[in-house]
Image (cartoon, one colour):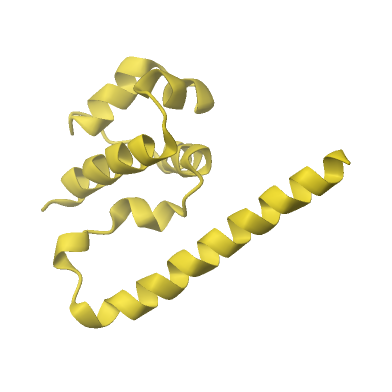
Length: 103
């Protein structure tokens, strides 16, 4: 799978996982809805700055948008699992801190 295709597939996957429509993601990234549609269709590729905005809006590390899960060797699974666990732990900590700050 090409890098562009991999990025498009992952963007859509993470967008769905976040419960975002293309319109909602576009709003979060201060861009047009049809631009998100064109990226997911593989017609356009975002700048580094836009990749950062997309990752921030979806609350994922930017490098995860480039992972081709189908091509990862089996021995990479523990490494990825640790990274995902770390990302989840950081997000939970941020959420807990935000909740505690309200009270």
